[in-house]
Length: 392
Image 1 (cartoon, rainbow, N blue to C red):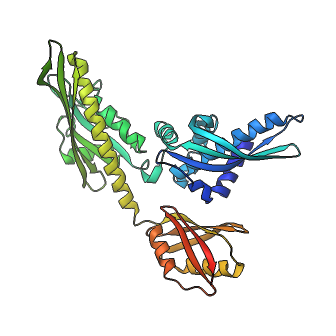
Image 2 (cartoon, helix red, strand yellow):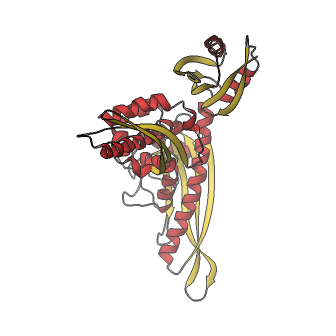
Image 3 (cartoon, one colour):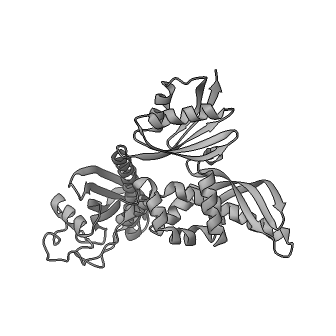
């Protein structure tokens, strides 16, 4: 329990830290955190190991906080604790101890940790707790009829409880990696012979009705099929084409989000495996495109909603200047709420709830006049504005 409590404290202290936004790529994030260990019977070596482990957990936790919405993080904390913090090292690409010190029987280390965002995202997605950028709050139900090479006609799960779709498995994996929730299929909401679910080729109205019965936000409806192409090599190697044609619909409004039509070619000497490989490849391509489109749609939907960010004030400053800057920031029409999260001699962090974008916040600040100082904006990121107060 001590480690969990420390993580929460560390997360609150360091979420606005410039190091949290340090050198990183799309797949990793470098986080600088402080870990704490307690020596038993004067064993500082064990305390140091405990402190490093504590720091790794804190770093992974900060990435999880960034991926999850606050309500989802609180709601799923028991699962997050179990999934991430018991073996935090699994999500760490590498780390470096920057400095360390002991005070009595307490040992503390400052660690620079490179966390794999992809590993954290995938693990949370696979266990149903990811809520990155509103994605996991969006549930997706697949209604795809698939015809493999051995099938005389398309098969679908709402008619045949034993029907398996290679393309849907690939599509589902692709959107799950991006944080969307794939609705588990079952036949309780509609069985063969119960209109409109007796048809293989569902209309948009049928698909939306099915989605509402399963409480899905998005339904993906369409077909997937495999065929042998005329191309051959020698006596055995053949070419197989997989094709996936689907459309995504919002169940709330029945509006179309996007249509995806993807094909893939593979070579194989076995007819059954060749067809399935082609379907899997086409499904993966369709899923990637679908995930990008759904994510863009979710971001567009969120654009008009209040967002959260940090304004980090660095460098030399007088208290009067900081108070004046804080008042001006709070008075911006885009800013709905402002809280001071951290004040240090050379840096302060302000948390804001706002409408629009951080770029618009930065531009609005540039147009303001300040008495006795100016501002130098050094960095604008989607969730952070970093600046310095410069005396006139």
